[in-house]
Each structure stands twice: as structure tokens, then as C-alpha cells.
Length: 107
Image (cartoon, rainbow, N blue to C red; front, top):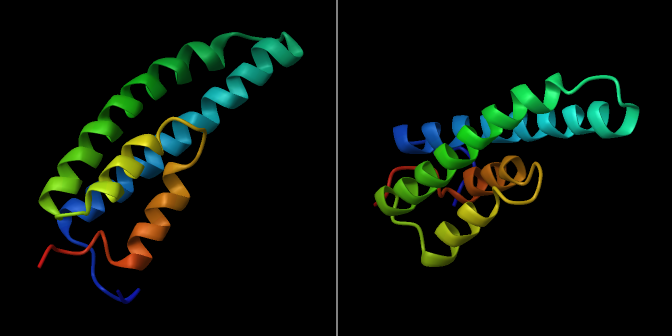
């Protein structure tokens, strides 16, 4: 597909939640560095652990809904859900899906 294809409302929600999930992952990683690396504070893990837990669940649900509504092939839906597991993978996946036209309205 073409990169200028406008995103559907579902695609925009998927992109926003993917960004939020990656942001909370980054915050959690920073919090773990401060807690376990420097031993300075546990606040980052406390805050971002909770935020990331919610973002992870929200992202998984949004990925499944987007896969159904946008009629993704099965592999795209599975890959989207699995992208939430390793740190920061939802962001490059969202960019790739946008470029492939997977976030545009289903035809």
C-alpha cells in the first residue's frame, strides 16, 4: 500500500495506544534503572509499572479489535499482540503497519 493512505479512526486509536504502550515501557525501563541500577528510588517502577500494566492490556485489546475491524491477515494481528511483549516494539510495528496501509480503512 501507499504511505499517503489516510488512517481510519481505528488505525488512529491503534497508533495512539501503541505510542502510549511504548512510552510506558520506556518509563518502566528508566524506573528499573533507577531502582536496581542506582538504587536511588522505587517511584519510577511504582508509577510506570502500574501505567504499563494498564497500557499492555489496553494495547492487546485494541490490537485485537483493530485486527478484526481493519481485516488484517491473521499474522498481522498475532504480530501486533506479540509486539507488546518486548520493550518498545509497538512503535516500529505501528510505523511499519502505517506504511503498509494496514491502519487505513478496510476495503
